[in-house]
Length: 227
Image 1 (cartoon, rainbow, N blue to C red):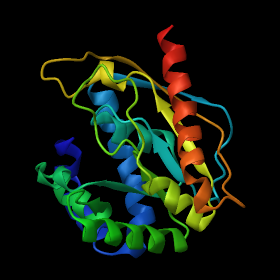
Image 2: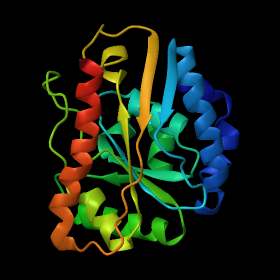
Image 3: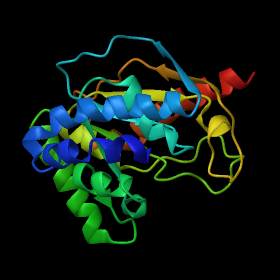
């Protein structure tokens, strides 16, 4: 993770100095993700249920089980998007520096931080940039949990901006690189890109139904691969 960031530090420093350079930074970030995945011996295999419209802003969501979820999301999606992620990741050396400069950070113990996240996400969406949120809100401590319950943030934003939600299912990330020390192995890393779910005409009263609809799509795919 750190080596390409160190090598290209001067270029990345410029590209993260202003929001107007974010599209260029995103291209570099996708190359970084490929470097990390292939360098670790992970070989992505992406299946698309439908084509992603390059001119459309989306709310990208996926299950969250591994640090590699960030890299695989960047590998799968070409549309420039901004991660909404937990503030704790800023503590990771080198990676944390750029993470803090390019992502929307949330402190889940601070109600004011949650409001600031919502405002920042709205500003990015207004500029046509997509958003990526892992709606479980973090990786469950119990690794036997296939898919944790979803939080509302991604669905509130999608409804508020009437943008489609595009779910992705990451099949092998927990097996390849979990948060359990000395676990995992090189090998195939499968991802499934589902059809986008429209939000036009959906109100906040339908938020819970929408949230559970998206969770069911991802859960069904996860369980089908385990059979």
